[in-house]
Image 1: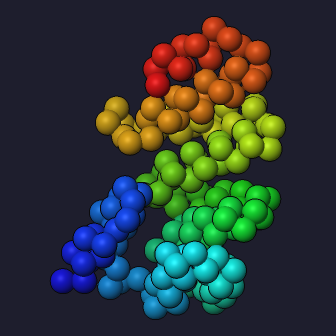
Image 2: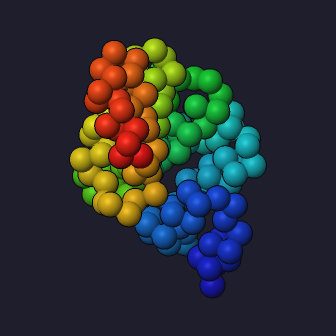
Amino acid sequence: MPSMLVLARASSFAGLLLAAVLPAQDARPEALQLAIGLQQRSLHDDAVRHLEQFLAQDPPRAWLAEANYRLAQSLIELGRTEAAIAALEQSLARGGDGFPLRAEALYRLAGLAAAQGQPKVAQRHAERLLRGLAAEHYLLAAAHYTLGEALRELGDDAAAAAAFGDA
């Protein structure tokens, strides 16, 4: 069973999560699966090229949000922050509230904003992320910490301390 093989070979918790919440690997369009394979081999330039081609070919709607999210992952690895932010925002717009990678996309947006010295933007993304997280979500503590860092940068030490305490 291919999906069990993928789960068994997943090298990170995020890989396990993606396999659990996204449709079966067999259902993915071949072009998207190829790009994911390139990402897994850290061939991000090639992955970006394939993902951009995939997105330009009017792919099945069900795969647009994931393709944009994965494009953002490779763009981040290549240091193309502005393009990564645009791809993450596109993934959220296309995926809506039910997008399985919504939390990961918001967390990455918050982190990118913080890295760019934009604590207010980081705060906005972290708060949006926290509004949608279940109490047992694996990003809960990290989201609180990210919010705390943004609030600390904004000079709101009391709110930052509360966010760090929630982490």
